[in-house]
Amino acid sequence: MDGNMTYQAYEKNSAEGFKVLEAFREETKNPMEKTTALLMKLLQDNKDTEYGRKYGFADIHTIEDYQKKVPVVVYDDLAPYLERMMNGEKNILTAYSYDHFNETSGTVGVPKVVPMTAEQADVFAKYNNFLMYGLMREGLDPDWMKGRGFCTSSGNHRTLKSGLTVGEASSKMADYIKGGKDALDVMIRTAYTSPIEGLNPEEGADTKYIHTRFALMDKEVRGMVSGFYSVIILFLHYIENNIDLLIDDIEKGTISDEIDMPEASRESLMKKIEPMPERAAELREIFKNGTDFPWVKKVWPHFCYLCGVGGDGFEIYDRQIKEHYTGGGVKNIYAGITASEGLWSVPAGIDDFDSIMAPSASFAEFLPVEAGDDFSKCVTMDKLEVGRIYELIITNLSGFFRYRMSDAVKVTGFYNKTPKVQFMYRVNRTINLAEEKTTEKALQIAVEKTAAEMNIPLADFTVYPNTDVTPNRYDFLIEPRKEINKFDMDALRESVFRNLIEANPVYLDCYKDLWLDKPEVYFLQPETSLLYRDMMVMRGASLNQLKPVRVIMNERQRKFFFRLRQEMEE
Picture 1 (cartoon, rainbow, N blue to C red):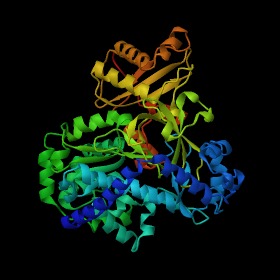
Picture 2 (cartoon, rainbow, N blue to C red):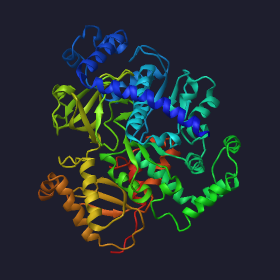
Picture 3 (cartoon, rainbow, N blue to C red):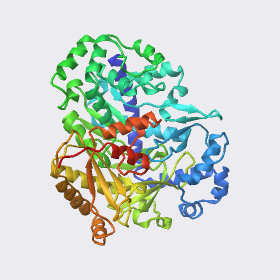
Picture 4 (cartoon, helix red, strand yellow):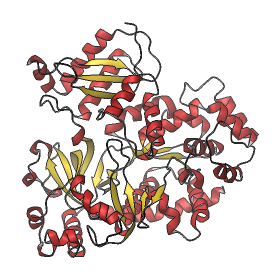
């Protein structure tokens, strides 16, 4: 790919992105005016929908009216409406046009669908794309524009009887540009190393191979873009486990027969590769003594950024990436709070865990987590208190009004008059066996402190709320980076218990009252979490949407993780 074309594309996009960034910062000076105007527009535009007529949108003129007349809902409340919309009925939840439904990962339970209106798509493009480029222009050395990014995105969709489609938004990009897939391939490969066969793969194509193979071919890669930092690790780990095969294919200009690839994809990919013996020799020299060192900047000498959902809730992966893969000198652009349902916040800056609420991307209400289901306690962003934790209630541009996201955020400060937040945990994944209400964050703190105390090379963990024993207890399943055959398990159990009750003192009260027992602890086999993600992808989940399983929520997850426990000599 012509480096000048890449530079010109990034120069153009980042210049446009910087304008978006400056406009956003101006918006933060008077966020309530912007977000109230958005709400009133949504109510006016949708007043004649079935949902709008039911709740009297036409007669709502203030936020207070809105909160009194429109109920807070969860997905199950909207599912009957969405089913009708998927069957082709119009003007149900939204008056805006759409031809596609975004589908969530289904990490826990059945995947959810969200109509992708043109208005919502514009929000995603504006803040997930252009504003990111603006931040990179402002915070990175201009050299980042001289090379492409290693992108991990892949997505497909299926067509319903109604003619509408369901799947990942990225799978529809070719439908919206002149020239279709061929034009999209050229456009994407100007900025990223991956070809269209990786972005919109055929069923059965090994997308990890496609993405990593094409990234390794390009010595000038500047950074990596992914949905989550946990997915970044997955791809880097794939390179380590398959480095000999990848180098052989790069050297010979082949695709190994060991790689799962539909024949049509194999044929089209072969037209885009050629033997690269010099690059293969460079890679062999780098990895001649294995992969147990920070190798990323050896493979890509100008590598300078990572972009994805990371930060506070993904510290395990942040640390692993720095210690085992990149070393120092790599900037982090932590994506804001975004989901299939919409976008709520944008990054506060480079290497900053905070994100800033986006007033015109959605209308957000904030429910103090201690309020439970008392929605009369919902407040707007001008009434937030620094240090408190709130659950997000959102109104988006896809027809979801006062939708309960179950995401808990902590207010860390303000940018101008707009709150800065950090994602804390999923409210519906809090463990509550005896009114102890242990959050995912508390579990993470306990495990990370234990790993540091016991010198465990931590890769990941999950916790099972065990109600099959009396008293009930937490079963911690800790995944090390390397196999552990012998360990002082009694000391490990005590360390986990001590750190758990420090993170959530209520657990100690429940233990003293015999409601809960001390936790049990097991080691998982290395790469268990990666294997789980592979299994979920085989079942149809999107790799780039899969979140870590912090709390085991169903029998399928329990069986999977418990089968991969290590036998331990104590």
